[in-house]
Amino acid sequence: MPISDHLKAVRSKIGHDLLATTAVSISVFDDTGRILLGRDAETNLWTLPGGAIDPNEHPADAASRECFEETGLVVRPQRLLGVFGGPEFLIRYPNGDVTYYTVIAFEAVIVGGALMPDGDEIASLRFVDPQEWEQLPVSPSSRIISRQAFARDQVPYFTSASWRPES
Image (tube, rainbow, N blue to C red; front, side, top):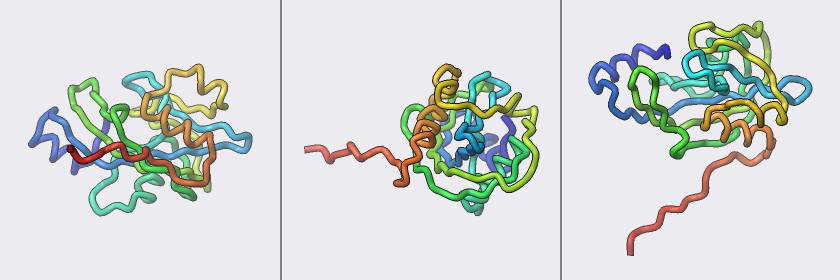
């Protein structure tokens, strides 16, 4: 799990304790409507490209950077899929780190590069159709986001508020 210098500095202070951060996710489709997934090198779960937003980085730039780093593809975010959070976005990493992600998800188009997993975070890459996606071990957070991506809803997704003040 490579992390930025910023997150390394934070982790040096808090250790493995819970860290809440903002991240991006990128949904990239091929010409036949299949979505790109990468097999995580540590967990073997299939995930969407993505990762933490660095300080002072625009979310769309983080999405483009993360996609390139993990897949070798140069992409242009073209649509906001939504903002995601909830218990599925609390990740316990094999090294003991606990991180909660609020994820800004984009759909992007490929504008260059060559499909190649980074070999560090992502062991392999493949485009999958909805039927194949159903059968794969997809991470819980990527399952939620990719379901929305496949829906191709033009209205950005968010979970409706359920919080109410105490009586």
